[in-house]
Length: 351
Ligand code: MRU
Picture 1 (spheres, rainbow, N blue to C red):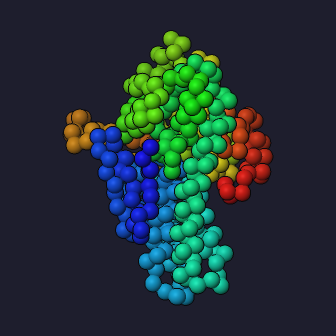
Picture 2 (tube, rainbow, N blue to C red; picture 1 turned 120 degrees about the horizontal axis):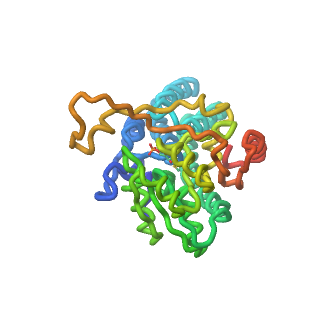
Picture 3 (cartoon, rainbow, N blue to C red; picture 1 turned 180 degrees about the horizontal axis):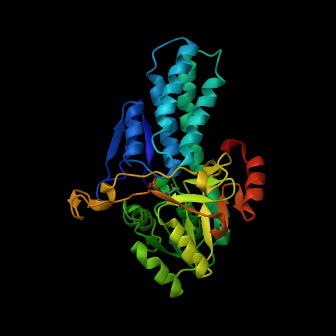
C-alpha cells in the first residue's frame, strides 16, 4: 500500500487523493501553508490522516522560525498552530495533533530552539508511526465482531488513505480478511467526493478483498434484501456521549441499519473521541463549497445559479451505534460511562 504522507528530507510529500485512482501524484509541501492548503483542498483527507499532516506541517513550520529566543519561538509557533487548527473544523484529530505539538513546546522552556525544532520533527514521526500501530490494534479488536462469511457495508473511506496506514474501518476489514473470514464488502460511492468509489475500492482491490461499489441510495434496498450483515464506518469526532460525526450520509445508513436489525459499528482511534464535546449538537459540521455538488470535475451538471447545500458530515446519535471499536478495545453502550472509563485508562501513546 502506498504511504499517505511522508517526510522527504526537509519536504513533506502527500499522495494527492484528488487524483486517485487514475494518477499517483505526490503533492510537495515546502512550508506549513502548503500543508494547510492540502488539508483544506482535500489533497489529504480522513480524520487521522489530517491529524498526522497537521503535526508534520507544524514541525515544518517550526523549522522556518528564525529566532534563538524561546519566548519569541513559542509565540510564533502558537500562531502557526492556531492557523493549522482552522484548516478543517470537524475532525478532532487535527485539534488533538495541534495540541500535542503545542504541549511539547510548552514543556520545552530551557531547551535551545534548535533542540525544540528537532523534537517537533521527531514527535511528528512518532505520531505517524503510532497511527499505523493504533489501526492494527483497532483491526485486532474489531475482528471479533465480524462473523465468518459475512458482507460488510462501509461508507466513505476509512482506510489506509484516511490514516497513516492500514485504516480504521478498513483496518477491521483487513484484519478479518487476513483471518480468512471470507468477507465481502459493499462500498457506498459517497457523494460528492466519491471517496468510496475512488479510494475504498482502490485500496480493497489492491489487497484482493472482494468489494462491490454501490450508489449511496442503494444501501437501504440491499439491507431489506438481507444482503448486508453489518456496517462498519470510521468517525471524524465522537462526542462524550457517543454521538458520532462522520461523512455525510452516515446517519441515514445507521437509521436503515437499525430498522433492519443490522449492527452498526464505528471504528476509530481514541484521538477521535473528544471528551470536551458533550454531544453531537456541539460538533462543528463543515459546510463545503456548493460547486462540489453541482459540478463533477470541470463539468457543470446543474442549471447555472442553482442553490446547493454541501454539509460534509452528519451526526449519528449514539443510540444507533452498536459499539465503538478502538485500539484499547470495544466500547459498548452505555457510551457516556464506558467512554469515560476507557479514556481514563487509555494507553500512554493516545494521550
Ligand atoms: O471529508 P473526508 O474525506 O475527510 O471525510 C472522511 C470521513 O468521513 C472518514 O470516514 C473519517 O474521517 C474516518 S477516516 C479513518
